[in-house]
Structures are given as C-alpha cells and as structure tokens.
Image (cartoon, rainbow, N blue to C red; front, side):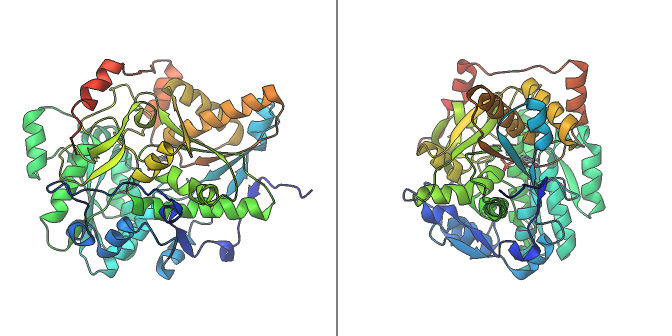
Length: 454
Ligand SMILES: *Cc1c(COP(=O)(O)O)cnc(C)c1O
C-alpha cells in the first residue's frame, strides 16, 4: 500500500476548472427564494438590482451540474490553491485512535479563511459587468477581509458594514480591510434608513449580522454602479466553495482513500456545502455512501433546534425569503457566545439535504470547542479559527468512538481558517472565564413564533 504523506498536494493542473452545482443532482430541489414584497419566486430580473447579473443567474440555476471557472479566477486561485489536505498523524497519535484523520486547510491566505474562494468570484463578475464597486456586511471580519483583497485585485470599490461589536473588538481586522482599500463602517450606522431605524428602536445596540446585511443592501441599491455581495448562505456561494470539495475529492482519489465520515462546521453553510457537494453528489447518484455531519454551536442551533420554514434572510426584512432551518430573523446569540457561526438561518441547499436525511447535524458547546481547538493546536501546529474548531471537536469525538469500536475509519474534516484575530475568545478560555449558554425552548419559541406566514 502506498504511504500517505503528511500533506497531500495536488498539482496545479489537477485543480478543478469547473465548479460543481449539487442542486443539479437533487431530485427534490431546495425551495425557491421568494420576493419579500410579492412572496412570489424571484426571477433573475428581480435579483439584478441587488446582485450582479451572472451571480443572479448562478443563484437561480438548479439544473446545470458543472459551471466553468473563468480563467481570471483560476489564476487568482493559483496564488493560494490547491490548498493542502493534511493527514493528522500527530492528532491520531495523541488520541491513540485507529481512525485516519484528514483535514482540508483553507486558512493559507491572508484573509485566513475559505471566504476568499467566493470573494474573488463575486468581485470578478462585478468587474466584468463594469460596476464601480460592491457593498457587504461582515461579522467577525473574515468575509470583509476576503472581499477587500478580491476587490483590490480587480480595482473595485469595497464598502463594508461591520457589526459594531466586532468593529470595536477586532480593530486589526478592520485595519487589514482598510489596508486593502476598503471603507469600513460600524453597523448599525447612521448612513442608511434601516441603520437609523434600528438605532432608534434599539439604542446602544452593538449590532447583528442580519442588521448589517440590511444596511449593505440599502447602500448597494441607493448608489449608482454598486451591487451587494454576500459571503455565505446563498447558493452561488456554495457553488464557488465547491472548489474545496472538488480538490478534497481528487486528492483522496489520488491516494485511493475512501472517506467514511465528512465533517464541517456550519454557520451559513457555505464551507460545509462546498466541502460536501461532490460527496453528496455521489450519494444522490447512488454511487457511494458517506456519513456527513454538520456542526453548529449549541448557542445558535439552527439545524438541530430551528424550524424548516420560509424566513427573512436579514433583520431589516429587505432581502428575499428563503426556506431554511431558521431560529427567526431577529434571533441574536447570547452575549457570551464567542465562537462565530452566529447566523440565524442556514443555506437552503444544506437545509434541504438535511431535511432529506442525507446529512446529520450536531450542536456543541463552546468550552468543548475551545478544548478541541487547544488539543489540535498543540499537536498539529495550526491555531484554528473558533468556527473551524466546531468541526475539530466532532472529528475528535468520532475518532475517539473508533478507539472503542476498533474501526479504522477515514474521517475528513474542513479546517476553514486560522484564529489569530480571535485571541479574546482564546483568552477567555485560557483564563477559565468562558461559559456555555444553551437557549431554553421558551426562548427559542419567542423568535420562532413570529416567523412570517407564507
Ligand atoms: C465564515 C466562516 C465560517 C462559517 O461560514 P460558513 O458559510 O458556514 O462556511 C467558518 N469558518 C471560518 C474560518 C469562517 O471565516
């Protein structure tokens, strides 16, 4: 048998030239997104005032299985891709598990996460359409950073609405974005109608992702030559992120490895959706079977405790409605929640796959996530992002189960990024002041009972 190296690299010419659109292989498609005014399925024409035309088409395309990656995007990908698939020999040794653990590391670029894979695609299509710039929101800042890098590459203006508490707590993220030329505004701001309204209604609020989305959408639609871009949740983003899964799939095949379990963290569902797409595709076509696990925080449990229903994608209710697992568009995780993955809903593709029983979901508490992060950092060297560490936690759990059963399973997980800007959270964990919070049913019901009736 061929020896598996620590790092399984692909050659440049083994990189995917097409993204894979898993919707094409789904017999039952994700439910259509609805116009917030008419509650009718949106058309490309409805979306083009908000999104670039090509991206609007990708958003609604649930039949084309493979979509060409334009050469300009492939050239940019070559600067930091293919990303390594790493055999976690040291973690296996530490756990004394018979399982074989692999992780796909997406933190190997300045933005520090997988988000660059979609940022560069979205910036490219905006440039190609002749736009002046794009607007967006960012929570922890990874998406804003990735988008700033992508916009500076194509010479586009980039306006980022950053959730106010992150703007204040993560000044260095903000400065990375400004270094790449982006204009960063704390949200809710007084620049937009929706920002002023939210500030008046909730004085002193430190903001939320849903609120920043509403502001960025308003900014895009009220400035000539601007469109809105989003770093997760949307089907177009999952499409671009399929590059993660396609590379993983090719690399495993190269060494004759058959994955048993594929694990990813899930916030809006884009890295998970991208990682699992080629594997789910095989399941949908009846070619192979995998155990797929989405991991979310116990303090923001959309898949494990939310409802599968139409909901607004943003707090301001200006975006289309999507059918998804949701906690309600006004849900905001408790203040002690540090680990990212704080969006109230979930990608409609991931939601539908979950509803069809093709993937499982698990929720984990944050102190256990940081414990796993620390174990991982000490043996594998990489300081993982708290978001990614949700996947590490479940990968370790699964590897420890193998220790009991003696099974040598192949466990693959997505290591989405690095955690250098999350040191306040690591500090709280190291100081022993980090706490867990699991919302009660009554609390969740408060938000779930006011879902829109569609
Ligand atoms: C944004 C982010 C996530 C969560 O987003 P998804 O769309 O669910 O993938 C996970 N990990 C890192 C490092 C991120 O930056």
